[in-house]
Length: 562
Image (cartoon, rainbow, N blue to C red; front, side):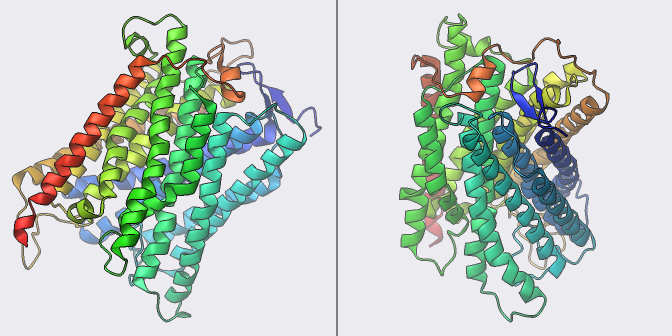
């Protein structure tokens, strides 16, 4: 392939698209969707098992499904998609060729091989150690090896991304600073390197321990280092899906951030402080000092929270500014009422933004308070929180941008357009209720990993409040609707790629006319007159303060136990 044939010009955006990069984006994204399907099937089986009236799986299959669901949904699906985003944000947005496509294929092969190995080993039934794989629980050595191989592949993908940035700078394929979306991808990749390093530090000796070459792994040391990987993997997701929020706003509405410098500073806060949120998984560990816990979950972590609050203001603010520039200036919220809610990309993005902030963000900060953590640690509140972050935040955002990437990269029309308009609402709202019901049941004491909360086979049974059983049942109902929404997405995405009508180069653009400049160049909205966004921010602040003090009330109710 000659240098001239390696590129095509996108008729929608005008960007030069490196064909090897385009192919790798497609392959990684499609593989991600396949693992979303696998992880989703395990997930609905877990929800139906925890629904007392259904109780689908026996105990051994429940813990097997729990292990596979955590790996496929929290790691494999999102990281494959994030690698696609890294290549999109570097090679495509910077008009550059991808560095060493052959190495990118090696990275893909390692990730796929590692993911398949872990799933095969888990299905064999002797590695049901769940996502955290805490020692002294022991899995098959190939379980740890598969995760390590997958992580090495992801690390190589990050190296290809960084190499592409160097090529783009040296060959001057863009002017000025890198676009904000690319800057967000850089943040995600930097955090990914830290995350993978933490995983290697603890999983390699754990694999050797499982093989008998190391006699002992200290459980507390394992937890501290493992959560450097386990929770920081979610911080990769946060940086990536915030970049997706900015990208969709720009692609659909031509929106530019209120201040690029402020948004970039928020990303910098992510790099410096976001991983410290890992400490909220260690609040009840007696071997860790209260001083360490309090510092990591208050003074330091609040700087990362500040970063998210900045994005939570500037993303809807950029949308409001773009809408007001189009003439939607009546009252506080005409810009929001007249937003393109029938566009699944925009609808999914905005639902992701709202639910990630209100459900995931508020609950995460509350969990990070040492005293409050005591009443919700190891309850089903915890997975309720990270379903609000990983699912209603990251997964919904990735689904949303897929509706734009299929016409842009695959040159195919979206099929079942009416269903596509409804899919983000079905999936997003259902998963929002899943998170709420799990957090509600956790507040009432329902344990995080108990196969049967009714205690039917327990020597000493415990009766939870009736509301707890109701919430677990409603959780099962909501999870069923979420599974329907997820299935619709997979059918629409795969069906569009295989059977969607081919788009001609002269077909009407799916992007806003202002999209190329908004996505791929440096620039600000040019105004701070976004009163509706500031009102929404005050509503968020009020909800946060109210919920924070409600949890202190719950904590005060336990004082009589002493």
